[in-house]
Amino acid sequence: MREFEARLRGPVLVVGKSGQLARCLQEAAIRRNLALVSVGRPELDLERGDDLAETVTAMSPAAIINAAAYTAVDRAEAEPKRAYRVNRDAAGRMAAVAREQGIPFIHVSTDYVFDGRKHSPYREDDQTGPLNVYGRSKLEGEAAVLKVDPGAIVLRTAWVYSPYGQNFVRTILRLSATQPAVLVVSDQYGSPTSALDLAEAILTIVHQARADHGSVGGIYHLTAQGDVSWHDFATAIFEQLARRGLPVPDLQAIITDDYPTPARRPANSRLDCSKAAQVFGVRLPHWHSSLEECLACLLAPADVPAC
Image 1 (spheres, one colour):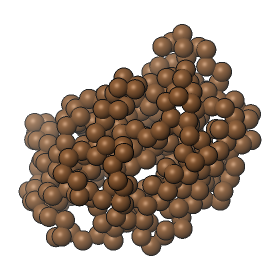
Image 2 (cartoon, rainbow, N blue to C red):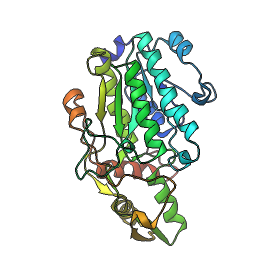
Image 3 (cartoon, helix red, strand yellow):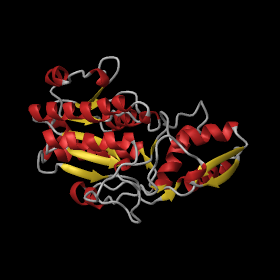
Image 4 (tube, one colour):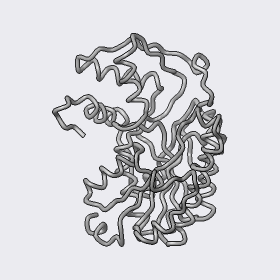
């Protein structure tokens, strides 16, 4: 792998600088001694329609990873134009630049392209049916990417968390420190996916995409192994807190109808990831072991560097 990295003609370009996946990609690249550059606001504002062409031409990157997205799921219901500008229009422009420059493009998408009514994990060729603006904007983003660059790689993932940014794990930790009771839905199922694991897998995919550019394009699913409800995921987090002697609030299970939100969520977010394993040889760890790694980072004493 190191020899392959040395043959790359330039750095990997990550669009998105402050998001949790972008930060994890930066860390993974450092561990691999791989040149990686992240771009984002204020230098690049995807909502304004900034063109990446000049940046890509000057940098001559080995690949482009789109880790940027409008991910405010509930707010998107009131701001659909913003969601589409970033998740569809900007994604399509990035793919067009990559195609023109002849470099691989990896676009990160979501389980929310499905309606969640299937009773088994979703395959890449299953019928889509997003329930909310965010999901529709991401689905149209996939179509925009593959229309202009059929060789692009679209990676659908789900329930992403990390030591950074806004995500379920960090929210639960905050609530555990401030609330006597926490209510979590128990009728939505998925595979909690560590952005730390996802970043490592994406960089592995970049190598193969570079070697086999154009022949491995398409849609792939990539999540952690195992599945769980949001309530049981919260239970696992609280178990880790209790083992560390930290206070744990009362955890109460509710159903989706008890907690209405502006955007509807799919009840089943489980994704079949066998295609990515077969084509790229990547398979993420089980969610439970990755959760322990993330919590070890988040809960480490301030004077003990853990991540």
